Length: 199
Image 1 (cartoon, rainbow, N blue to C red):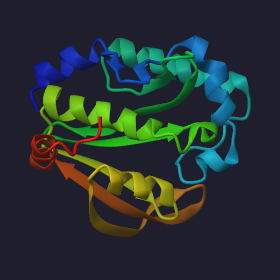
Image 2: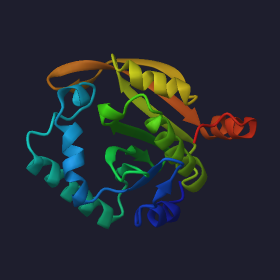
Image 3: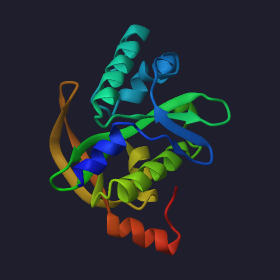
């Protein structure tokens, strides 16, 4: 990866616009909307973090994000509905390997907004940035076993299933199996030429 390009993009996290969504920096004003879903057990069931115990914890996490933004580190985009301004989730890089030119994405969505194609739209926008702006060679998803909705999303977005890593993640005191999905730049641009990329 071009380090200069990386610094340019993440030193001022770009706003990504889609038909229904605005993906932008998470700000303190998003705390209540974030807490609405981050406090739910069902949301964090397949994630590494536990439900937020109170609004103060959510505000503390958003303060941490402000520091990461200022450092120019990769951090989450907030997913906001264009028509209402409602903050409904996050998407961003969980890891970037600059040496081998790949990134890993993670995302979470308020369950009240499932089934509306919101994460499909958000993921499409971030993939566009990953392959066109960052010029990544590979983007991967690591999905905990049992998270069938996320696996369906990966397949719908054209990610290739590579297999399962048994007991590879220690989450909330238990070793969990993780499914690996990937998309290469050549896959993405081939789909783009064929008109099958979802954005």
